[in-house]
Image (cartoon, rainbow, N blue to C red; front, side, top):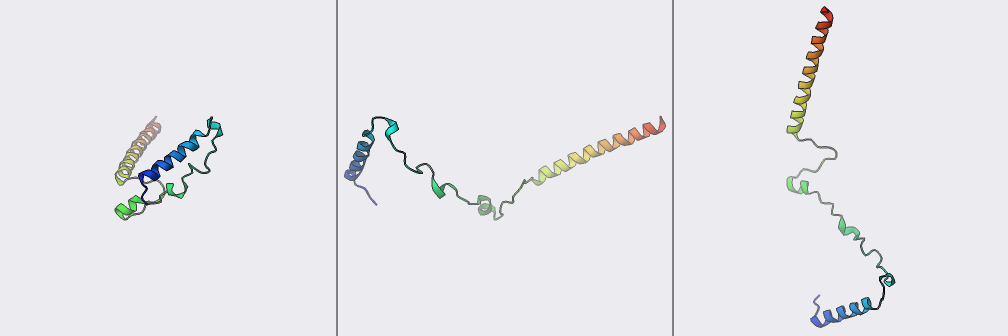
Length: 95
């Protein structure tokens, strides 16, 4: 739909007349649901699925590299602690 310059000027003039009818902002009645937005605010598109073909899985996702580093760190910590326990047992046994 095209609007001519004359129609646009008339619309603007009418709106300005409506705005200028009020002396105080308190007199202006707000439009119902003017800022609600409606259903167009949510766009349930899964961009990862579109890009890769794999849907996003719910929950926490850990990258395999992080998982390997985490596992290695735990193994090393357990090894250190078990070594300390073995040494403590030997000391207690011979003291």
